[in-house]
Each structure stands twice: as structure tokens, then as C-alpha cells.
Image 1 (cartoon, helix red, strand yellow):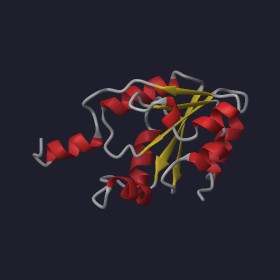
Image 2 (tube, rainbow, N blue to C red; image 1 turned 90 degrees about the vertical axis):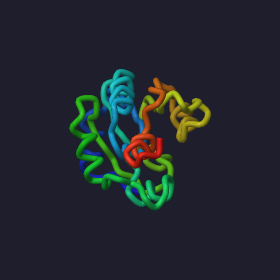
Image 3 (cartoon, helix red, strand yellow; image 1 turned 90 degrees about the horizontal axis):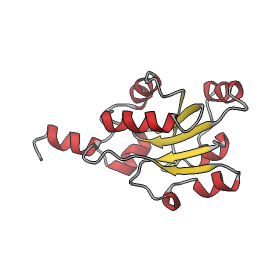
Length: 153
């Protein structure tokens, strides 16, 4: 099971009493759909923390050819976006265990997810939090970018 890093633990201690928003994903090749989504996610509270799939979990979820960018590179890019306050890498296929450790007040995913499909929604709601399905910029995906780059439109 993934343990929160010292940086994440220090961040959580520093922001006690503020509204923490959590989202997760692979964020393999960052595109404008990701950035718009993360900006909207941040607008749901005071701070935004991202659960980032590890390289091993991306491989299990997306296939042997993924990720394109390694986890520490993906983490670095995300940490340098204005909307992102903290990034925690997790090894599992879903972020449920770190959601339980972090206990965010707001849990969000893109609009292609229904609230009852969002991993951790039951936990967050049971703890008095909110779960939201945000915007989804149709036509933007890492898979599509890879297909286009390979000429498989």
C-alpha cells in the first residue's frame, strides 16, 4: 500500500482547516483538456492535491507501451502548474487507499465520470465531503495524441 510522502504529510499539516480538493489520473502527456480540468478542480476549494498513477499502475491500466513520460517527470510538470498544490504518486490501480489517508473535503473527476463511478466517492461522502464530476473537453486525450503522432487518425 502506498504511504504518503513526508512532503505530502507536511502539506496536509500546513493546510489544516482549509478546503482540500483531490483528483487523480495518469496525466501522461499533458494537454489543454488536462489544464482546463485542473483549473476547474482547484476552483472547488482552497488547495488541490493530485493522486498520480505510478509508472507500474499506468502500465497495468493503459498497456505495456505506457506511460510515455515517467512518473517523476509527470509529477514535476504537474507540480509546476498554477492550479496544483501537491502531487502524491500511488502504486495501486485506484487511488482509494490514498483518498482514505488524505480525507479530502472535495473529490473530483472529469465529466466523463458519473459520481457513483468515482473511486472513493462513498468514503468522501460518508465523511461529510462532496463529490463532483467536472468539465470534460471532448476530443482531448493522451491516447488520441499518441494515435495522431503515429499517424493512426
